[in-house]
Image (cartoon, rainbow, N blue to C red; front, side):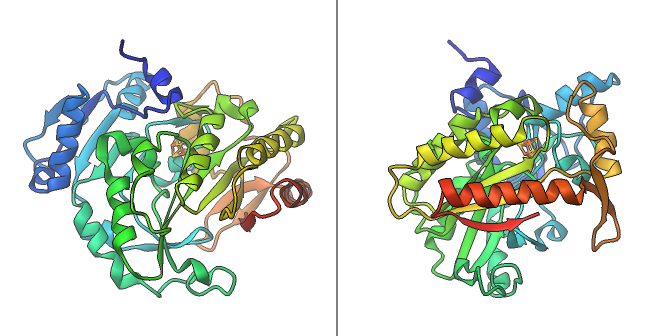
Length: 362
Ligand code: SF4
């Protein structure tokens, strides 16, 4: 019997779009054709477009338009401007996009402030061109290549800035291709991705040669109501442990850290659960990235329209304005809250995950 969408994700089987839009140029690439074949085999409706313009045909009603956009995957060709890599501190030297957009429904999603227009997901058909362009960036970055503490990671390429690549893997296969490609690339390089999904089965047998680090993006189950359409946290942690057993370097992205009532007990229990999952692991290469909740006026406006009933606190109380190096402003927790959060995480991680390396706090 076919599983409902959320049941499939809970069972670790990944997301499936309702319809696949295919631009004409994308069919000129083997990856574009492979995505169409995979989608057709899964029973997804395929819409082949006459040209390269995405005709979304969304209803006027904002709720229905949102739902249809989120369940649409488009196969497009990444133009040269999208293949020019940008630095992505503090995660990695460079951002590499295999896709843009995400099918999940997180009421704090940072993509709301980054990507414009209806929230459809676009996946790139010219994956080979994207990967072939990476060699020019080796040794050029400042986050890991130019850092004393992280230089051993090599030149790092982050694939989760504008998407959750594991969410799309059942349809695209792009993450497996990229991991295997890095596995063959005999150079001081590392692919990085983070995910709120759990279907890692296709990744386990790949010849990754330790050149891909997966992180599980986690938050306590208490905040699960803010993470619609994702895999349960316990499944994400279990998936990460399986990746570690398959020899991958792994990590935790604890994000966004939310200072709502009960946060201390909730994050304590979360860290205890992670420690229990890795208790039997030997020689594990485990990192932790700590990212506090933040938003901009623009992202708040988009998120309020997408998730009007969300109880996620985006009020002014307990917040302060931080100006970015690009001159924009974002709302972060005030100094006292930040201090309390940071002290808690650094102490607690030191106790329950003493072998873990904290990469950054932000
Ligand atoms: S899983 Fe990540 S990218 Fe996807 S909606 Fe949630 S926060 Fe956004």
